[in-house]
Structures are given as C-alpha cells and as structure tokens.
Image (cartoon, rainbow over all chains, first blue to last red; front, side, top):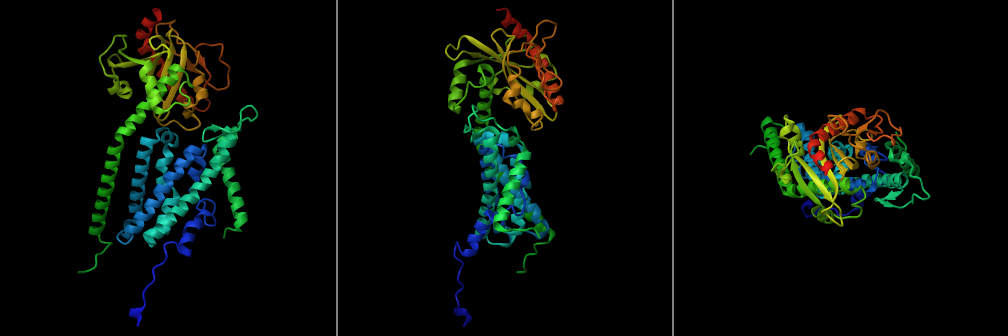
Length: 213
Length: 247
C-alpha cells in the first residue's frame, strides 16, 4: 500500500522557504542578531556608492558559495570541508575582485582590501557551515539571498546616515547644501558607524523583543 | 561495487586536486578575459591623474571616461627624456614608471614628461606634468607633479599609493592634502633642485613659504617618503626643466 503513496514535493516557495528568505532580513539578521560581518559594516560604509557595490559583491559570493557547496555537499570529504569551502569562497571573491577592477576601477581601489576580506566574512563561512552543507541547493540559494540582503540593507542604512551627515551628500550628489549645513566629520569615522549600528540593533531588537540568552 | 570511502587519503587527494584544477582554470579564464578592460581602466586613471594635476582638480568634473580620453588626446603631448634632459626613443605606452624606478643607474631611466596644453589652444603650454615614484611606509607611493609654464611653480599634484594606512598615510590622496602643494615652488637656488617638503606636525600656516608644506600628523614616514620621492625625481628632471625655464 505504501507504494501508492506519492511523495509530494515541497512548493518552490513554501512557508518554510519564505522564512528562509525573510528571517535573515529581520528576526534572524546576520548583523543585528548574530552580530557577524561587523568589520566590513564599519569599514566600507563611509559612502553609499562603495557600500552598494560591497553589498552586491557579498550577495554574489554568498549566494554562489551557498549553491556550490550545497550541490557538492555529498561529495565533500568531511576532513577537508573547511578548506573546500575556503577555496570556493576565495575563488568567487577573486572573480568579484577582477570584475570590479575591470568595470568599477575607482570603487575597487576605494574598497581596497575589504573586497578580498569577504573571504573572511563570518556570514559567508557561517552560512556554508550552518546551512549549505546540510541542505539542498534551492534552499541554500534562498538562505544565501536572505542573508546577503539582510547584510546589505543594514550596511546601506549605515552608509546612508554616514554620507548624508558626514558629507551632506548621497551617492556623491549634494543633498545638504554647504551654505546652511556644516558636514559633521565624526560621521566619516568608523566610530560613528559603530554607534549607528548600535542604534539599528537597539531598534530592531526592541521591536522584535529579542534577548540574548 | 563497494561504496566510495570519502575519508580515504586517495579520495581526499583526488578531490583537492580536482577542485584546485577547476578553480584555477576558472580564475585563469576570468583574468585573461578581463585583462584588456583592466588595462583600459588603469590607462584612464592615469589620464585622469595627469589632467587633474596639469589642468586643475576640478577640470574633469562631470566628464565621462571617453570625454576624458578625448581631452587627453587633444591637449597632452608626451616627451621622453633622460636625466640629462636629452630625448630618448622609449615608447610611453609601453613604459612602466615602476620598472624605470627600479633601475639602479638613474642616468639610464626614461623619464616621461606630459606637456599639457590649454584646452582652447593646445599648442600653448599650460603645465609640465612629471610622474614620480618612491616608497611610503608600507609600500610604493607615486605622484604626478604639474609645474606651470615657468617650470618652477607647482600647479597641481596628484598622489596615489599602494598600501598606506587609511586615515593616516593614505590621506595623501585627499584633495585637501594635495592642494597644500599648489602655488609652492621648486627651488633652483642650490646645486640640487629642491622640491617643497611636508613639514613635521600639522595645522601650521606655511602660506608665506614657497617650499614648505603643512605636514601629515600621524603619517610622518609616509610624508618623509613623499619628500624624498619629490626631491629625487625633481633632480632627475632638473636638466629638462632648466631648458624650459630659460625659454
């Protein structure tokens, strides 16, 4: 009798899968809840343009690495799994770096070492270890998208505040005229990024009621 | 067939070799495929530096890449000289300032001079832009120094670096720091040609001095490296500049 029971495949965007996408953007955000990827969140957020490029770079690396590691998960020898993950991530980062040097040379110089440091971004390795190694490629893709967007919107929010008040500009365009606004140099420092990030974490945790164990 | 043992040494070696081959091949293709675009991006940056130094920092505001290249081709003429001021037949397009800098015998260095003409009359000299190369704190620093038609007054300067500390030595790329050199003069008074130098400390008004520039607090070694670079290269260009000065 059991032969007649057809195994129903899970819908492409089932409730569980939608949560894979939405949770990292809010209630399980990699920056505000897991407090990962902080270094680049503080370092690259001085201006919006570079920050958006950084967010896109992390999006590409995280999603691709999640899918590739997930597809390879049954073949990866357990003893060298971290090295395999590193090789995949490092190769993807090298591709991103090369593409930036070709198509966004100025920004690649402005981001300097922080593009290369995506390799050590805890969010990327964290998702590979915690999710991609144990789940199918489609789920891993959604998890990668969710976490990359969760990371991206936070650093873009920080950059928005920093560039607006630190330089009176957004995407290099003057918003707050020098005639009546004196740019606040403090916002150009990483310390300001730390404080803005702290405020974002405070607001999000107050809203969700999240408390550290 | 027995199930593959994924933890055997043979499997792990084979896996590592395959992964390396696949990733290495991918990266080689990407690198080769993008090489021309990367070269073009670097060339455009060099053209921007030369024009910013030679015409003014805001001369390129709002210009697209092709517009910058068109302006460069219109107003810039390249002369290649040696330290005696004699013309050499080296090709500027193939020249690497870094490789020339590495030549121990400075008299064999090829020294490009970018003669920038006025936008409305390119045959009239606006400035001489001289590329220089040296060492900062962590790695190389370089600059494009533009002298006015009198071959004495600095019209503009653009610094760049490979690995100076952000917020400290890397400030040499800040517009404000670079503008401190504008209007200063190289001195022909002594045997050696003396370029303006960053002074110790920061926040001092050196506007009444023609050869002193407000320094970089917290970046002394970078500033000393920049000073040494400017002095050594201005001397290499001395013979050439002297001929321009007397005209």
